[in-house]
Length: 304
Image (cartoon, rainbow, N blue to C red):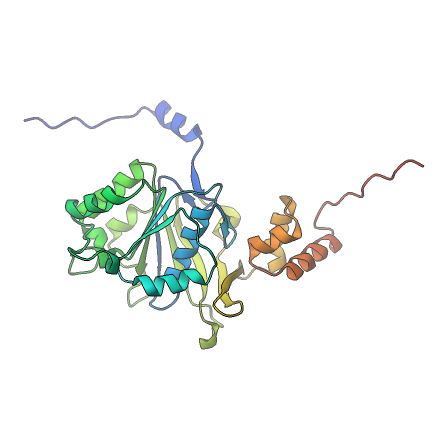
């Protein structure tokens, strides 16, 4: 029995692949054939941030300035949270998009779902409707590995590679180790296209709730302003509702607003993109114009 020879590509083939348009599920962050990791210490708000990303992709909306070009199917696989707790979190943000679906352990009794086995992988994929983004929160809760490092499993690595080859984006959510770094081996990190680290702001208070800095620690694609850390704060809005407010960490809200205004966003759209009120958005627009940061030509005068 002979092994199949490896497939080789010419340099011209690779250049041709680069010139082809890349599908983005969340601009400029997530591409359709990428494996991303979101990690941070316990209790910092990892699941809230992951839900925000999933919601934006499923609705074709925006989250912390990242935009989904169109609505896409999203499957959120959570190995720890129960349906009631997760439902309460989702209710904070209004009516959820129809493209967002969940797999939860308390709604799937029987054998535990172990994604480090072929049987577990097939059980999951047999029921899904070909999602464009799969969120796995957390890999250690969905494998049978004693060490809690799911990415050490060759079977789980093959599962991730298969999703990437299928032009699917995968977001892994996991807890940082005791030193604050991402859990896992160097080998598992090498397979990741994007690593997002959640850190507590230096001026954070216990009454802040979910308030985090999001840092891009590794990226194969991002450059320039896309690498600026984001300071995000989940703030309550009345009873049973909440919304995100954000800006670049160490960057003023006006600095975040200027490129969006230059793209042609009006004040209401700017408010939605930044997660601020309409009044604040109009103030930012007015301030940018007063400082001459926007080109706003005067309309032509009517002939008399």
